[in-house]
Amino acid sequence: MILMSLEILVISVVAGVFGALLGLGGGLIVIPMLTLLLGINIKYAIGASIISVIATSSGAAVTYVRDKITNIRIGMFLEIATTTGALTGAYIAGLISSKYLYIIFGLLLLYSAYTMLKKRNEELPVGVVSQPIAKKLKLEGSYYDKVLKKEIRYNVTGVNKGFGMMYIAGVISGLLGIGSGIFKVMAMDLFMRLPMKVSTATSNFMMGVTAAASAGVYLVRGDIDPKIAGPVALGVLLGATLGTKIMTNMKSTTIRKIFIPVLAYVSIEMLLKGLGV
Amino acid sequence: MESKKNQNQNEKIENMELIISKTLRAGVLISALIILIGLIIFFATNNSGYPANSYPTSIAAVLKGLLSLKPYSIIMTGLLVLILTPVFRVGVSIITFFQEKDYMYVYITSAVFIILIFSFLLGKVG
Image 1 (cartoon, one colour):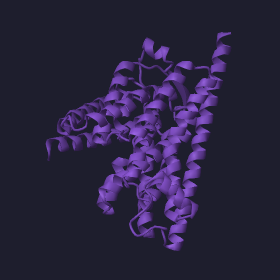
Image 2: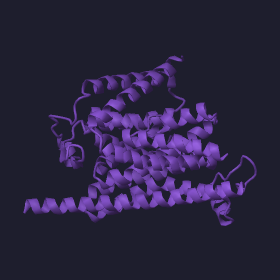
Image 3: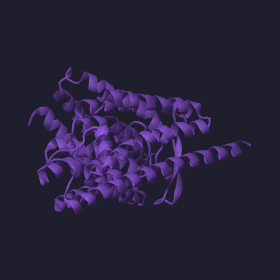
Image 4: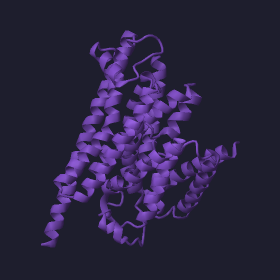
């Protein structure tokens, strides 16, 4: 019993590190590890992954918010789209075949992996001119980059596209229960052209809010088993704290190089699911 | 004049970020501590306080078990605190935006908060 808790703890530390680093929820690591490695029922693994998302988000946000890497305005503004999207998704579930959704969004992620690959050596976005609406919403920001040793000011574009994509991301997560972080990072990176660090930190900040809304349901359904979710929470919190230290001292290009294979892996997995392989 | 105004604005934003970060850290530390205590008691006594393979699945049941210090209820209480940290974070943001007199974001953040509560009640957001 203690041994298994320790194993869960170690897995969760790893999930927390990667989650904080890449702006993802950690479900990507927690679910397969718990089910395949430890033989835990998928129901409890999903319940634990919701806890993992919240732990990553809150654990990472402590540092990212303090260091001003998280753009709270962008996070809150986009959160309107994600939460309403998630509500829509929950309601239209069953009306749409998830098969096509997996294919469409698998392709979209694959395309964004390709675009990211093209700009893999771009440390910071260049030539971004702020849209008037971005100025109106005060979305522009700045943070101190420890690696570049200077204050980075950034402009924001593609607000409408980003907002739309976030709504769709919400619908998808409401429908398929996936993509708490990956679509958020993608929308901020691809459409809004934010610095990579700002995208992952803001994604981290946001995903906890959405996950908290659904956590209650999982609790009532009995999917959150304390002997599994407890060690997951502790491990992920520890891992996320470590992850933030690694991220702030890492080059954006390196973060992106870790992100691309993850993106490609998820897109291929989604395509396979859609094709029924 | 303009730069002084900007500086004040920046200080306020910085202030807000510190407040949010501190509330988060407090929430995270408290929840981790409660979970840890629950796990330690569980392993030390080898008793979850509940029949095999069962545990509390509602807030009321968690709180009831907590009163008699059942290890599983203690762990669940810690998890509940963790689940509430993001909700808390949104609530604190509303207050800090209000203090900054940034009313546009008071509305935006309140909208998020309402949607959050709404979906919490509906229990359907995934």
